[in-house]
Image (cartoon, rainbow, N blue to C red; front, side):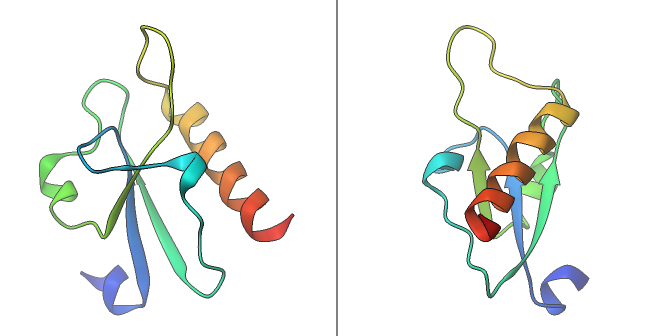
Length: 86
């Protein structure tokens, strides 16, 4: 995969077995990250999941267990920004 050969850590944002909760994930300021988002119905495909380095899950409560892509991206990008720059 060209991302990996370019030094990126590939992370899926998905509800999956053995995922790391976003609130406990600490990005390394020395690493480059490629974030993979799926859609709220199908998520990230199994094919892509087989190629990632790590999976991060956005903690959710209640009966609804998905956000649309804009909300998910905003949550994750803000979390990365806050942890790396603030």
